[in-house]
Image: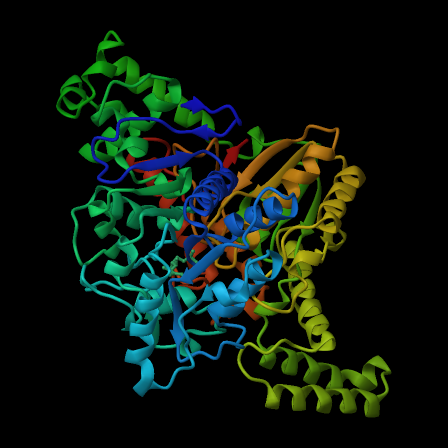
Length: 623
Ligand code: F6R
C-alpha cells in the first residue's frame, strides 16, 4: 500500500494480469478527487494550448461524486468551464429532454446548472428525434465531435453487461453513434430508476466504440462490490465483443479507476500471492489459506504441505515449521470471529443506523435480538423515510382501512371519504415517475414507519427504540437525491449527542440501487468528525451483498429458529414484500429470500472450512 501526499491510499501490487492501467483506491470518495484533478488539469492545458477543451461525459450513479467535486472546485474559483465543450455518451430512446429520466435533465441537475458552461457548448444525443431522422442525427453528432477537434478527455462508467456508453455485448470496435437495443441486464439495472422494468426504454442512442476510443484520454470509473466481476473481465480478460469495455485495452491512454470493492475480483487484490512475493500479514495469511481450502475443497485443518506447494503458496509454507502450524493459526483466527450471544456486547448503548426502514432487520435481524437479550440499550435510527418505494395501491389499502375504521376511531367519515377520493383521483391521473403530493408522500412515510416499528417489535425491541430521522437529502419525492447537506449532518450529530453510544452499526455496502446507503454513510462520517465520543463501529452489508468470511471480523451464528424469526421480522415490511418497487437490479429474489440464502451460505462456507457446523450466520466488519 502507498500513501500519497493527500492521504489518498492507493493500493499497489503486481499488474501482471492487468491489460489496462488500473488505479485502485481504498476509499471511493477519493476517486472523485483524483478524477477532478485530471479533468481540471486537462481543461487548463487544453484551453491554454488551443483555446478550448472537449470533455466526453457519462451519466449513471458512478460519476455523480466527480461532478459534485467539479462543482465544488468551480465555486471555489479553481476551475473555469467557459471554454469547455461537452459531449455526452448517450440518451435513452425515445426520451423527451424534459423527462425526469432523461440524461439531459440528469446532466443539468448534477453538473451543468451549477457551473459556467456555455449552453451552446453542451451536446447530448436527442432522444426525441423522430425515428426516420435518427441516422442523420447520429451522423451530425459524430460530425460535431470532429468539428470540435475530437474529445480530449472521456469519462466512462461500466454496466454489468460490460457496456461502455450503451455499447451492449456484440458491439463492433468500428461502431459509431447509433441506435442500440438495450441488454436485459441493463434494463433490469435501470428498472428502479424507472419505477419498474417495463417502463425502461428498449433502446438508446449511444456513441459507438470507435467514437469513444477516438478520445485522446479515457478514464473508466467503477465503484461498489456489484461491479467486481465485470471489472475483472474488462481488465484481465481478452478483448472481446462480449464485453465492450475490453476494447479500451487497445487504447493508448485509458486508465481504470476503482475503489477496493469494485477491484475485489482482480488477481492483485484477490490472490496477490499467485503474482508476486507478498508480505505475510495475519490478514494475508488468512486470505490465502481460506482460498487454498476453497480451491482444494478441503477443510483448513486437512490442508497438506503439498497443497501449499502446488498452489503458489510455498513462500507461506516456508515461514512455518509445517503446514499444520499455519492451518491451526488460521483456524483459530476464524474460530475466534464466531461470536454467539455469550461473546457479544452486554449492557452497552447501541445505535443502529438503518438507511431505509428495513435495512436493520434485513441485515441485522439476528444480532439485534441477541443484543437485546444481552440487556443492551438499543436505538434504531431510520435515516430516510423510504417513501418512494411504496406502491400507490398500498396507500389505497391503508386508506380503505382508515375509512372502514373511521366510526370505531371516531373520525369524521365525510372528511375521510373526501380525502380518499382526492387521493384516488391523483393516482388515476399519475404517470410513472410523477412526484407524489406532499400528503401522499407523508402517507407513504407513515406506512413505512409503522412497518419498521412492527419489525423491531418482532425481534424483541420496544417500539420506543425507533427514531425516524427523515433526513432532508432524501426528501425529493424522486429517485434522485440531493447531496448531503449541513442539515443532514446536524441531525446525525444531535442523535449521537443524545444517545452517546458505545457501539454503532452502519451500512457498509456501496451497491444499493440509488446510492442512498453511500449518502447515509457520508452523513455519519461527517457527524462522527464533529463528535467527541469514539464509539466502536461495526459495518453490516445491506440486502445486496455480504462480507466474506475473511472480510468479516465478527460472525454471529443463528439457529434455524433465530433465522425464522428474523425472516418473520422482515415480513413486517409488507410494502416491500412480494414485488418491491426497488428490489435492485442485481437480484430478482425478495429481500427475505436473499437474506435466507446469504445467511445459510455464510454458515455453509464456515462448515466447509471445517469450522463448527452452524445453521446460519450474519457477518460484520469492525472498523
Ligand atoms: C451512462 C452510460 C453507462 C453507465 C453504466 C454504469 O452515460 O453510458 O455506460 O456509465 O451503465 O452505470 P452506473 O454508474 O449507474 O453504475
